[in-house]
Length: 65
Figure: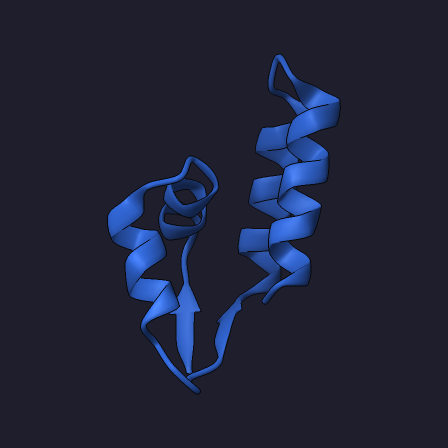
């Protein structure tokens, strides 16, 4: 299992190719995050200038975990 923290999730959401490549090359390994990280991501999106778009982006990202 590969457990993502808030920073790694944020980098992935921002399109960091190093993080995205690493995640793409994990093979059959499962990728997860914890409830606290999910809450932090939702909170950051809710307080951003592009609130609605970022909330959708975060929700789609979390569904993939």
